[in-house]
Amino acid sequence: ARGMSAEVRAAGRKAIRAGAIPQRTVARSIVMGGQGLHTGLKTGVILHPAPAGFGIVFTSLADETAIPVRFENVTDTGYNTTLTSGSRSVRTVEHLLSALHAFGITNLLIKTDDEVPALDGSALEFCKQLAEVGLTDQDATVEPINIKHKIVVGEEGEGLEYIKVEPADHLIIDYTLDYPKPIGIQQLHFELTSPDTYTREIASARTFGFVWEFRKLAQLGLGSGARIDNAILVDDEKVVNTTLRFPDEFARHKVLDLIGDLYLLGRPLHAHVTASKTGHSDNLALVKAIHASNWI
Image (cartoon, rainbow, N blue to C red; front, side, top):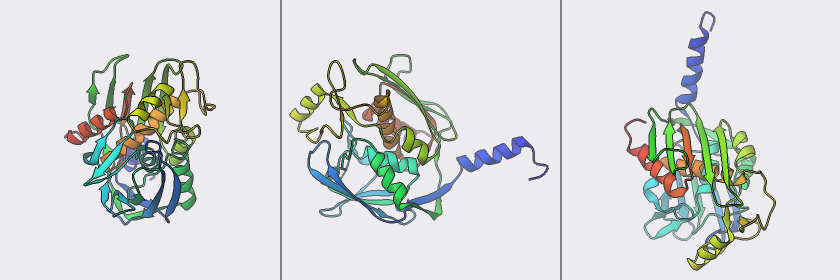
């Protein structure tokens, strides 16, 4: 590299970051059990290594119906992200997908029934298990999605609900959450630079909701698995069932969800995402807009 200018070396490093990266799977199978957040049923999940080019695919334990992780297979974004193929659906995939996105796992067979277990309401246990079994880089490569131009969903502006992407050489997220008190306004800046960064800053942030929301969910037949140990419950004045892991745990969980929903693109995303007051339906709308764009 002697005689190479600093600018040329920097450009080379940038090309490595922005270019093709190895496809990756888990080194061995992982088995986890728990309860579904929305069904309330005892459930489990098995993560199996998969060959290069396989992608991330859910299968039912009952009849092995394949449900590939693609935005075209999303059938519900109301209170979670649900994937469907034929007569089979799997709910609440976003926390697991978030961990897989952060760890750069591109090939995986996931066996589960109607819902991925909630565990403690975060992605922390998924990260611990992935780190424990280890990952295998495969011979094939995958091209991350590199955003070339700004794409906006919604009306951009302070206090408005919108989500946008702009060019960046890794995933950067600026999230603004605006909820009624006692949550209020929270802002978070996060850069996905390594699985360790994600595990430390995002993975342990738990799902949350107001007590009245869970009553409403119960009327809809959802949320029946919300217990004092797998979701943060908030009333009109305070958190009623736990101690927060971060002062801004609510915004961190929204970023966790966003990282998971962005993986519906099927490839790692290199972009600067700015989101304000958004949820699963906005995330899916952005994924569709990115896919429809010729600017990738």
